Amino acid sequence: MKKLAIILGMAAIIALPTLAQAREVTFTTQLQNYGGDGAYLALYLVDANGTYQRTLWVAGKKAKYYKHLPDWARGSGLRSSEYDGVTGASVLSGKALEVTLDIPDALIDAGYEVRVDTAVEDMRDNRADASAPLTSDGVGKSFPGRGYVKSLSYSF
Image (cartoon, rainbow, N blue to C red; front, side, top):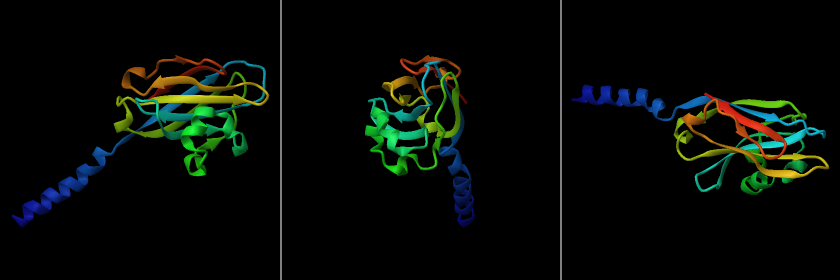
């Protein structure tokens, strides 16, 4: 009986990582040709109610400009812990931001949405410039933007 308990315990330990798996997801945000400086972008997740959940990536290194990414700024509270380690350079007009991240499987097909807020110096800020449901059906599809973003897509 003791051997059986040990074997079952070891099997549970081996199986546990499969319960908390993540997959690599590549997000591509293609910008329009808008004739301005590099854009700041915040790529983030919201739940089914539209409530901010977590930052995926921030393009643009000067934190003093993050307040111009309105919905993300409000949701993240502009706490550095929300964007530490997930920042990069701003994105130039007509270029694409491509970011590959590990996303927990539990978030896929669970009502979450990826959103992108954008801002360009001396131009307007765009809340939810682009958005896409984080679903298996959305893989490879192109979701249009409403401002500086031409399209948002992702692949597993």
